[in-house]
Image (cartoon, rainbow, N blue to C red):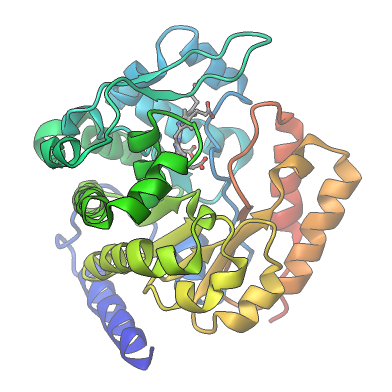
Length: 379
Ligand code: CP3
């Protein structure tokens, strides 16, 4: 732990030096030198608690629905101009403290040889969702998966990072992201949002094949994250949304080693690395050893308890997204409770415990941002 800590501090020192030297920045865009979101990731004191929201660009916004009336979700993810516009919109609308690249954790699957589509949500029917026409079921399927080369295969994502940095013009930092190997594998193996039984059976029945699949997805996540940082992402988040489906044995055997590998690969970049997963309340010890700067948790884990179990790591989260549906007084009371519990010490970023829901009233988002910015951490 001590060792991990020291190397992290060292990389920050090196990074800080790079940032001070004119012309050495890896991008030519203005960089918010001491933005409160980046400071909080590094557990430095902040004037106000920073807030951003997972899925902050999405269907609850009229501006997003207007873009989506013109283009499909995948076409949106493949247009750098639209990526920039949609990424910057929630900053302009709500004054959030960080922007997250508009893309998807499944965006590299076509380059790996998978036939990815998104069903359109229809009124009165189940919401739209990802579908993979040729899911991965056998050893041969896993071996046939290509490793994507981000510069060759995902240029539109990297151009989207650059365009988003230009659109943000230094107002707030840009977060890049990738999916964690278990969560991406669940879509790849099941063929969509169809549970976890096939993937978990693969872990138990054919662990060597599962390990090869996880290794490929881990390599893919690392190359995408490093390419996004190189293109200008100022922090990155790994989305391992469904990790809580796994037992401790399977976490330790399959998922944690891959997640630690991703964290190690990111350390050399100097940008803060955030780890998000749900259902980790009983696994905080091992989660704290993975090597991330920030751990983002869902609402099932009280953050004050996580604070005690994760010394030396910044926390992000964890308001229940349904609170944004109302009533307003309960939303603000619960947000206030969270801020009092963990907002006075450095190293806290306000967020939801999972993505914002499409039925969220935008005025509640505005009220939440105002309340978080109105809170004053004790000096
Ligand atoms: O957070 C952001 O604003 C950045 C963009 C982003 C999206 N997806 C946009 C999106 C991010 C970071 C993601 C991550 C993602 N994608 C995850 C992990 C986070 C989580 O929510 O658990 C997962 C599991 C996916 C896979 C995925 N993409 C699903 C299951 C769906 C369908 C469900 C849904 O919400 O419609 C998507 C589609 C998707 N990704 C949408 C958006 C805005 C909706 C597309 C639309 O209809 O316009």
